[in-house]
Image (cartoon, rainbow, N blue to C red):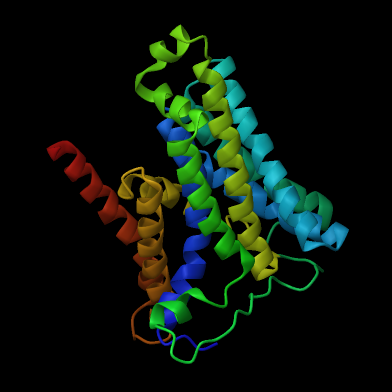
Length: 295
């Protein structure tokens, strides 16, 4: 399908790992634990997914491996933070560094390379073909013909909203941030909900990381390229609400899609064009901080 607005169609794909990482990060954020390990969770999920798909010959097994590996690392972060009382920021940074180093070491040990890793895997992720409607609106065309990961991220976001705002679990998890004493008085354990938040972030980041590598069919060091950090900005730009997350992720997806489009359309140094998403992120962070201070 040729989308009438290719940049928008590309942005929907680009926003997917951001949305998945931000969805999981929202659980830890609402539980009062800022999870800055999202970058490392995406990275280790991407490597495990591609390696498992290579050895098993199944994209589905690769996707499951990516999720399990990220959940394991997220569980470690939760254990060190909640059980051993380590600083959540230092632990998150350590997890990011650990994931970066571990993927390179495993890549060298298993495949004898520290650079770009191209493996024999089943066919790359295929787009889902949905019936075309000749007179469908432009938004329909933009939203169609994506991989199942894209639609999974949307369904997961809806499920996130339901769990957070329509279930006792979500109510108790959100109470961990400001009403911890009330939970304790009810005989509940706030740290148990926080740990669950870490595991959920591992699940979603593992899915996001597997999308990065399986969609391209390759793994490169730092394939996450700051997407875990940008996902944190998405959480706050989206006002810590599921609907806001979708809009904020799309905005960043548009910034990167425009950067990709500009490389072949404008006579501007490539380094400057590639920096557009990160410069945009910087200005958004400054704007969010100013708004927060004024409030």
